[in-house]
Image (cartoon, rainbow, N blue to C red):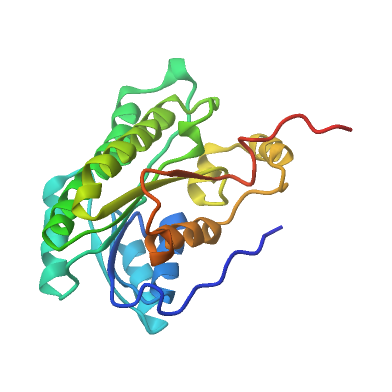
Length: 264
C-alpha cells in the first residue's frame, strides 16, 4: 500500500542550484527528481557513477537541468573535484545542499567488523561533514543557503543490529544542530530529517522480512514510507516557506516513534 504525498510546486525552487549526494537511487534519487520538478538546477553525486548518471539523464529527459559525478563523499579531493567541474559547467553557486549519501550493514553489536564500522562512519558522518564544509564555504561567500542533512530514526531509537549505523546517524543529528547555530549568522539554515522505515533498497538490506512485517504492525499508518514522501518534506525545508526553521530535526516515520499501545 502506498500513500499520497504533496505534489511538486512548479517553480518554487526556480533559479536555484542544488547539490544532492547519494542520488543514484532511493531517497536521493527521489529528492533529485522532486527538486528538479520544482525548478532547481542540480549537481548530483554518488559513488555509483552509472546510477547517478541515470538519475541525471531522467531529469534532463523531463526537461530539467542536472549533471552527475561519481564521487566518494568521504574523500575531500573527490568532492572538490566534482564541485570544480560543476562550476566549470555553470552550476554555481550551490545554494541548496541535501546530504543523503549513506551506507549500512546490519550486524549484532558483538559481531560488527572493524571495516564495516569504519565505512559507516566514513560515508554517513564524515561524508556529511566534508560535503557540508566545502559547500558551506561557498554559501558564506555568496550570501547564504540551505542545508538538509539526512539522518535516520536510528539516531533516536534503539534498533537491533544497528549500533554502527545509529552511531553515524546520531552524529549527523548532533552536527546538524551545531552547524545551524554556527552558520545562521551567514544566512545559512541547516536542518535534518530522520526518516523511519522507508521502502528503499537500503531498508531492504537492513530489515529482514519478519522485521519489516513487525515494523509495519507498529507504525500507526500501517506501512513503510515512500522515498517521495521524504523528498516532499526536504523540498519544503529548502523553500521560502521554511525561512524561520533552523536547527530542527524532522522525524518522518508515520508516527512510529510516538506510538504507544493500541487498545484492543
